[in-house]
Amino acid sequence: MEQIEIRSEKIRNLIGIIPPNLIRIGNLLIFILLVVMIIIGSFIKVPNILACNVQAYKKDDGTVALAVVSISKAISQPIEEGKSLKIYMDGVLLYTGKLNEKIDKIIVSLDTLKIFIPVTLDETITTKEQMTFILENSACFICNIEIDNQPIINNIFRNILQ
Image 1 (cartoon, rainbow, N blue to C red):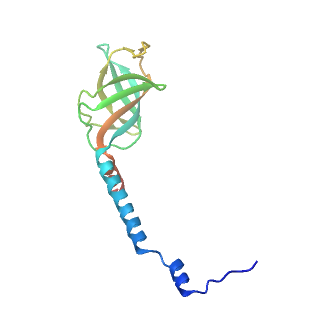
Image 2 (cartoon, rainbow, N blue to C red; image 1 turned 90 degrees about the vertical axis):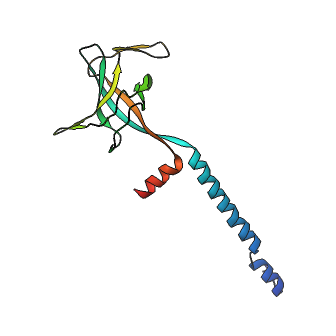
Image 3 (tube, rainbow, N blue to C red; image 1 turned 180 degrees about the vertical axis):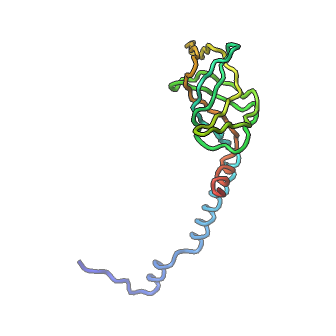
């Protein structure tokens, strides 16, 4: 095959130079997209969930207390009263409620740590689907506690700074 050579200097310059307006418009579009993403990220809130495995203990008054067996992440600050709490068993939502009081005490022993969740459950729970669960001693559940509800941009900056 025969190679075609462009001999004209004007044509070589035209093909080899990127127009400055194209660069300016591209940079402006990238900047606008970044600003829009930051603005949207400051309005959309994402809950910060503490997932833990809990075990049920019957009290003398017929109610059930929950103690944390394992926890998904370390907590260094108290969890305030009124935070959302959901309890699941095998993927089925059993209970939705709020914390009765602040979680501010962790009992650390030689081999375990114990956190008691301040919520009072009845011995029998009926779900929305009319399924009844009777809570026995040492029954294990998954518990999700909403720690806070902050915008996405705050979570990103918090993770960058850690």
